[in-house]
Amino acid sequence: SLGRSKIHSGQLIANRPKGHDYLRKYEFFLSRFVNKPGYRMMELGAGPDWNIGASVHLWEEYFWRSDFRLHVVDLKSTVEKLANERVSVTIGDLGDRNLLNVLASSAYDVILDDASHLWIHQLLAFEILFPSVVPGGLYIIEDIETSFGTRRGAWSQGAEIDSYTVLSHLMALVA
Image (cartoon, rainbow, N blue to C red; front, side, top):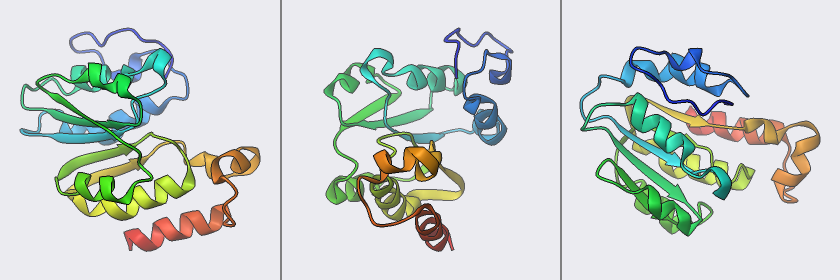
């Protein structure tokens, strides 16, 4: 979302300036975790170099507890600068099944996939990582609209599947 102003004490994310308005939706789903002791989140993708870590900083502010832990996974080595006592990082390709299997060995309250937006990565990551979401947790895939319309070609990378098949596969994995 647009507006990189900090959240002030007592301010709702929903009151920040909006872009694609994901933050308002995130608050609806994630507010129940704000006070959860030992809350663990994994974010796949840390953003482009010009804005790397913007969401990491937002999550650190929003999930204010000292026992909040965020694991960030990105292909770019610049993600290393985001590591601190509450944030761990892994550099790697989310198209790598071995990496995903290692990541799946931990449990998370929320996994947020905002990485490559490539269908093949979204499906593979979901298939392997979804079981590591604790009961009552969430798995969020951002920018699923890359499976539809004019954006489809760039994100399908020539895959011979359509958006119906992508979503059907996701639904079958959930079921």
